[in-house]
Amino acid sequence: MPGRVEQIQLWDTMIIAPCGINCSLCRAYVRERNPCPGCRGGIENKAPTCLNCAIKNCEDLAAYGYEFCISCASYPCAKLLHLDLRYRTRYRVSVIANLERIQAVGAGRFVDEEAAKWACPECGARLCMHKPQCINCGCTW
Ligand SMILES: [Zn+2]
Image (cartoon, rainbow, N blue to C red):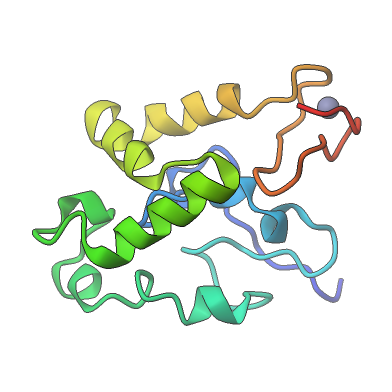
């Protein structure tokens, strides 16, 4: 099927980007046409902002093989602080809080917690952080 890509699954810890963003909550991941495979997935259907992301392309992440930014000696660097401010302001999501939770309980448990936290209170479907309504039932969460 054209436009279909192998997406990282919701329950896989790989769905969490190195910066702490949960890709499964992004409008680009949940859209039906040309869905994004997630930060750690392939390059198909990816927005230029994600392909050119300063964190995704960070030399320290690559050089040291860090899974998440929180392992880095420069944590939290200016790039990450900027991203955190933008996400807190726009979407009420703190990537720094996400990373600290991952360090505290592990990525597996964090993904489980995210699944519970972002379930629609009406229908249980996964919510999208970029949208004020549930994609499935349309309720405002
Ligand atoms: Zn719903």
